[in-house]
Amino acid sequence: MGLKTRQEYIESLRRMKPTAYMFGERITNVVDNPRLRAGIEATAATYEIAQLDEFRNLTVTRSPLIHEEVNRFTLPPSSIEDLVARVKLNRKLGQRVGTCHQRCTGLDCLSALSIVTYDIDQKCDTKYHQHFIEFLKYMQKNDLTGNAAVTDVKGDRSLGPREQPDKDMYLRVVERREDGIVVRGAKAHQTGSLSAHEIIVLPTRAMRKGDEDYAVSFAVPADSPGLIHIVGRSSLDQRELDGCDMGNIRYSKYCPTLIFNDVFIPRERIFMCGEVEFAGEMVVRFSSYHRQSHGGCKSGKIDCMIGTALTMMDYNGTSQASHLKQKVIDMVHRAETLYGCCLAASYEGRKEPSGNYFIDTTLANASKIHEGKEMAEAIRLMVDICGGFVSDLPSDRDLENPEIGPLIKKYLKGVQDVPVENRIKMFRLAEKLAMESADTISDIHGGGSPEAHRVTILRETDLEAKKKAAKRLAGIET
Image 1 (tube, rainbow, N blue to C red):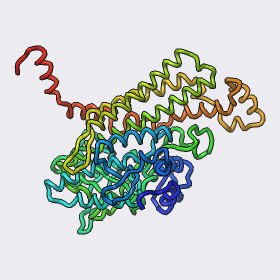
Image 2 (image 1 turned 120 degrees about the vertical axis):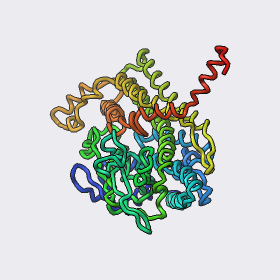
Image 3 (image 1 turned 180 degrees about the vertical axis):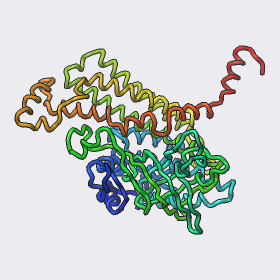
């Protein structure tokens, strides 16, 4: 089959029966819940654009494994061109949905596993890479979405996994069987786990001898017995449930905590189990791919913020204000610097022994540090340009009130030939782009903490080469 349509994707989720809770209540119909449907639609956009001529060449590629056309989100990169296409595709999707499309993390997992499972097999004479390749074929043939379950809850951060008073603070193997393993633990910040078909688990950190139960990687269907999705709160989530004041009326983001309550994993779906020396490599590979992904989608989101700011300038009658034009320029250069850094990380990529391509980790992490700072500044500039009603606009329900609605519309009018309803909609969009906590917080913590990005840069940079260059210029012989 290879490629699903948007509707086929949604129907495939409808056939699944995950265990999910939100606001203390069990959700029996995930697909039609308005809070979750907006997130599902964001992922559905990755299927939708594969059917559109405008995006097809970027979204659809050919798999050397199944010899069919597949969605790029199921293909680990096997060339520099593939690395570049990842970034370009994410930017297009960022422009289209204005939030997280929730599918890049699955590809980041597949990309990391395509390298590390091969490396483990070469050293340990295991069968993980074979397991992975069969799983990858399954993902490609059925055009499935994967979710990255990486971030453990960690408990006492001063203690390692095996040192925790409660041993379940890091996901671990609690039983080994002939046909597989049983795991227990929790993964936090699981963006779009209910939009996914498969949950792909990786370790959250480097491991040491004694941490063998925690050095585990596998894939499991999102509706497996014992797997519990608990949807987290977001600053604007109630509005989607209420059906008003939403801003972005099509797409959204939600982030469950995922509890593994003694979940069975068949042996053929295990990609690492006890090989502690490879846990750190798994984390670095995944996080670097994911930080590259962020640069594409977040530059696309800034594009949406720029469009919002420019439209509000038209609606407010400030399109000729030179100081606001300068702020737009500042937003543009932030988007392009972020985008350029991720493209550079792609062009500087290299082929690994497995045959897959890996990006330049220093450039990818530099991009993520830039994102963490500059996305916040882009938001500030957008709000500055749009005006104060971003923060306290009257509700749509006030506008519908026959007594006060006409008065509100009278006093919210901007430029004469712009319908007041359009100005209100754009204020709402600006509010959503600025204040949707599920997405804006990920600008800082998505793909790891800012300190993790700095540590990776220091570790991956050839500092001795820089010292050598300086000494040569100073005439110091070494």
